[in-house]
Image (cartoon, rainbow, N blue to C red; front, top):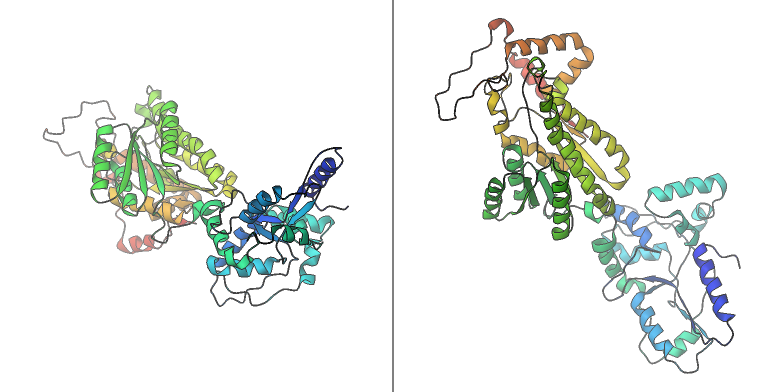
Length: 524
C-alpha cells in the first residue's frame, strides 16, 4: 500500500506484526481523527484539524460582512475522544469478537468547509459565503519539487506542520457496519460535528492555543497580566508598579529594601490592586534565579519584565581615573542585572510563546551626555543586547522596548541637585512611558530632545560635540562627585553657583520648542 505518512506506515506495520503472531488473541480498533470530548471539548494535544484553528483565529478580526472564501480541501473523518473511549470499552467485552477489526468512525466525512461552519459562531468568524472548488487547491495539496518546498515554507510560517497538507484529503471511504451492529442498543454513537464543534474551539482557545498568552483581556491590555518590576521600592519603579497595578495587572515588585517594598505593596492593595514583594539583589545571580523560580512556582507565569533597577554616577572622567570600581558596580546593576533577569525568564517565555521586556534606558545614550561615562555605556550595552536578542526571539513573540528616559526627579539624581542642564520630569510621567511600553510594545520610546540629539550626532557631529563640551564646562561635578563632604539633609543648604554666562546653554526660542514637539518619539 502507498501510505501517505510515516504515522500511517507505523500503524500498518503494527497490525501486520499482531496478525502474524501465532496463537495471539487480538482485536483491532481503527479510530478516525480523534478530537476533544464532545461534552467538554477537553483535549490534551494539538493534532489533526486543530492545526487549522490558529489560522482561523486570525480571521476572527474580520467584519462579519466579509465575503469569506474557504477551499474545499478534501475530506476527512472526525470522532470525539469520549465516543472512542466508550466504544473501546464496550467492544473489548463483546463475546466472540477476537480477530475482528472495528472502524470507530463518524457516519459522514467532513472537509475544511464543514469544520469552518462548525466553529464559525463560537470563534466569531464571518460566515462562509464563497466556496473555493477543490480542483483549484488540488495543485497546492499535491505540489512536488520546488513548488512543494515553497508550499511547505508557507505552511510552516502559518504555524502548521507542512505534512498536514499531505493528509488533508482522506482518499478511501471507510464503512463501520460491524461496529454499528456491535454497538446497537448501547446508545454509543458519534454526535454530529456541529453539535460539539463550539466546545472544541472554546477549550482550544483557553488551553491549547499556542498564542493564548498574547491575547488581551477585554477589560484592558494589562488586566490579568503578571509583571516583574526591578528597583520597585522608589522612583520610577515605585510609580510604575502603582500605575501598572491600577490597570489590572499583578505586580511582582523586586528591590533590596524590604521595608519600602512592604509599604508599596500595602499602598497598592489598599486600593484593590494585586501586588507581591520579593527582596532581591539583581547583582547576585543566586538571588535573581531564586526569585524567578519562586515567582513561577507560586504564580505560574510571567508576562512582562520591567528592567528598572539602576545605579547612576555623575562624575567627570578626570575625577574617575582611580575609580574603576565605579564602572564595575554600575555595570553590575544596570547591565548584568538586567541581562540575568532576561536569561532567567527566556526559557519560560519560549515555552509560552510570549514575553515582553521594557528596559528603562536613558536619553543620555542618544545625547552622549558628559560626566556620565560610567552610567551611559551600561544603558547603551543593554540597548544593544535587547536589539540583538529581539532579532533572535521574534518567532517566539518575545519582544523588547527600550525607553530612552529623560531626566527624572528621583532620589538617584539628588546629589547633582541643580547641576543638570534640563529640568526633570516626574516619576509619574516616567511611569506613563513604562505603561506605554508594556501596552503598545514599540521597539523604542524616545523623547523629541533625544531624537534631535540623534540627528545632531549624524548630521552635525562637530557642532554636537562642541555643545556637549560647553555643557561639560558649564555644569561642574557635584560636591559628592568631587569627594567632598555633603551636608546633612536637615542642614541649611547653600545654593549652587550658577554657571558662568559664557558657558550657559543658549535659551531655546518658543517656535523651536513647538517644532520639537512634532518630532516622533516612538519607533514601532
